[in-house]
Image (cartoon, rainbow, N blue to C red):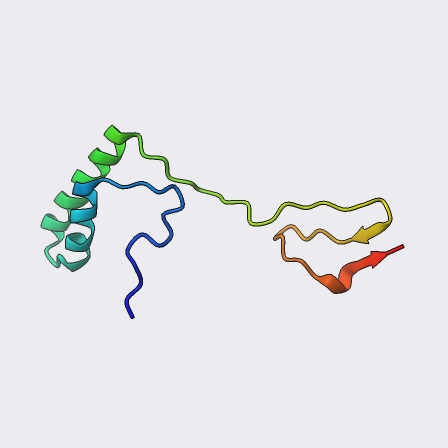
Length: 85
C-alpha cells in the first residue's frame, strides 16, 4: 500500500498547484525540468507564506512532589526510572 503524499504535513498546508507539481517532480529525470518545477514550488511557498513546522513537541512533562523521575532530553519515557515516594 502506498503512503499518502504529505503524511508528515503537520501544518496542513495545501495548494492545488503544489499538490499537482509534487508527483511530477518525483517522476522527472531531466535535472533542468525538475529544477524548474522545484523553483515554481519554492516561489509559491514564499508567496503563500506557508507555515512549515520544524518542531513538534511529542510529550509534555509533569510530576508531583512525591515522584522522582529522570527526564531524558530526547523525551523518551522510561517507567523504570520513576519512583513514587
